[in-house]
Length: 378
Image 1 (cartoon, rainbow, N blue to C red):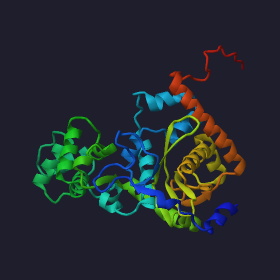
Image 2 (cartoon, rainbow, N blue to C red; image 1 turned 120 degrees about the vertical axis):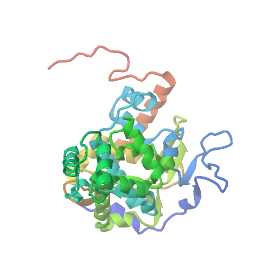
Image 3 (cartoon, rainbow, N blue to C red; image 1 turned 180 degrees about the vertical axis):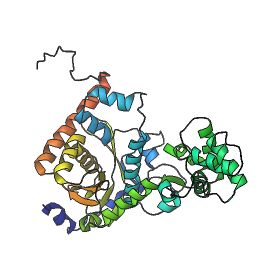
């Protein structure tokens, strides 16, 4: 069912809140969001890099959501300890696909100057892929068949330069896109067993300091572009992500707890309608609502609106743009029911108060607060 609220506010005259937006850095490169003592300055900022945003000394929506759906102990483990859980390759591909699709929708300018596509094996069925195939080709050419895979590739290319070898295609692609220096460093990382493949060497920006463009796995690249195309197919989604500002950082102090809070909006248009783009396994409303419940998107929305309002942005309406891409290409726009928003606001405020209490007491308790004995039955 289409929301009347989103449609009505789209036609209202915009306020002038956006005149208070400041660039993240001044002409000399100094951060406008920090004062001379290095403390945060409340305000609305454009152009704060993600890496800088995550380091800002303020509390984020992700932390508040975690506190609303789990215990303080979970929050401490995730945000205040040195424990780290590595992502699997499948998790990384899913997250990266959403990230790049998100970037194509919200900040497309310069995307192709920052990234390049790495070929897929399926696109070169006649190329040699495995060590066994390389050895067979070497044997047919009267060459030795011993050595590592990289040695086999080099030997075969020395003997037969026109041989189509997939590893060589990958190498040429990375050299062209990322540069020789980055390629050589990636090779060294693989040889030193610091990563499993040339592409993995570029994970998490490990070689960003010497990389011209960042390589993206071909499947991830294609899926990200499908997300973009699917988003463009939804007329209202396109209107929501227009006539406004992407990736605004908002910093404000909570008047009740005194804690500094931060958010980074996907998009706010000049009518102060906020939108959040979610790549999702399913845009089916019945399934997406459970995703919203389980991941506490309602608390996220409430926190974002709260921080925005503290900073002078009159955000009342918030849209979730869900883009499904794995099993179908579907885009849907969602708005939370008013009663759900009210419940979420109370949960959000309670989470901020709990965070303040835990920070002051240094007691990051679990399922019981005072080490009670829990009587159970089944």
